[in-house]
Length: 240
Image (cartoon, rainbow, N blue to C red; front, top):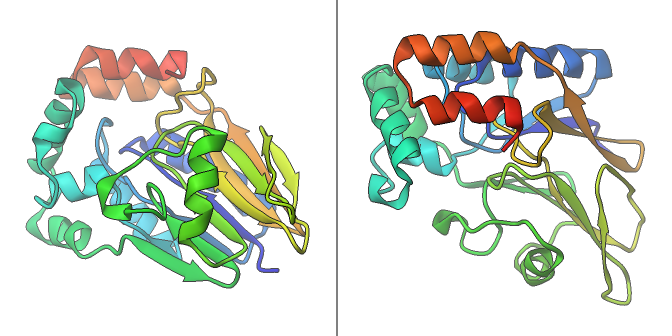
């Protein structure tokens, strides 16, 4: 099986992205896949997009990427997210916004299906948070594994040969006749109560959710200097 790192929801948090990539380099994987939302919320959208284009083998579109590119109505977002999207639009070049506009919604690699939201209606930005969400979505991809982001809350759902759904919080063995949906969480803005950046590693017939510390205060300082909403800076320390 291909060894790879899967990251999602960097949200213009360059400090978190750099820390995660340093951790990934130590893992010595074959590939890096990015599931979308390079920008939005954070202070370094252009830099994060450039780094991801240099390092990731696959880059997908997320809802914030589409919003900045003009493909998703900003009315869909809460006021804090909307303010960050409008701020971000002024910090990206026309070329960078065109790059975001052309990103694919899904990709398939080896035995994996990759998507930002869910395999069911990927352009509608549904959330995958609970076992029930996973149970319904298993019908909408054919591969053994599906990796998603978007909710910023990591978890692993396993579907057995009998159709039973099991949940795992951090790690799961990949069994031949079983299927899996993995929410890799968020690199740049975790929301599971743990402020450490999240990503996943797939190798040796197992998938593991990794957590990495980064300089949150530095990111917060940059956000405040940029004039981004205070709420977005404060929530980084809370992991909410």
